[in-house]
Structures are given as C-alpha cells and as structure tokens.
Length: 77
Image 1 (spheres, rainbow, N blue to C red):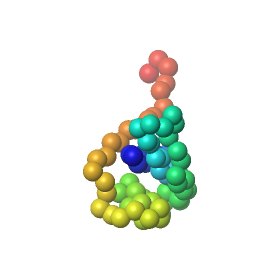
Image 2 (cartoon, rainbow, N blue to C red):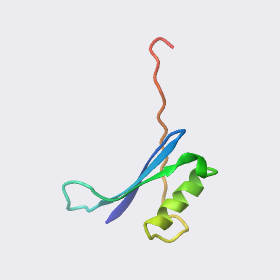
Image 3 (cartoon, rainbow, N blue to C red):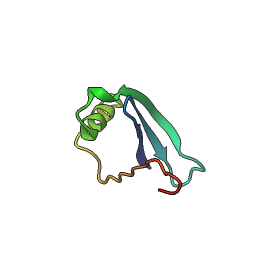
C-alpha cells in the first residue's frame, strides 16, 4: 500500500487529500479530505505537518516527496 497526498493551495484556501493506492486495486481510495485557511500557515511545510497530524500520522514526513506547480497559460505570451 502507498499513501499519496494531494494539495490544491490557493491564496485563500488549501485543500489537502490523502489517497490510498493498492497495487491490486482498480482505483485509489480517498482516505482523508481537509480544507484549511491558507493564511494560517507560514508555508507548505507547516500546512503539510498540520494535515498529517490531523489525519493521525507521525511527523517527520515519509520516505519521499514530489512537488508540482501549475500556473495559468496565456495565449501568445
């Protein structure tokens, strides 16, 4: 089993999800879904630590992390 954390962080709200992936399962299972006020956290690490504690996981963080960033795409820019 693998646990994946998904984050959608905007200027106002941060939505954090944890998904469980089984090698034999057809689709991941949503285990936790939380929303936070983004302004309450100094940065991503504080937000992630809060989320992990809220869902009952120990800190320090897991074995690996991967971060991705999306931004607006403008035509002709």
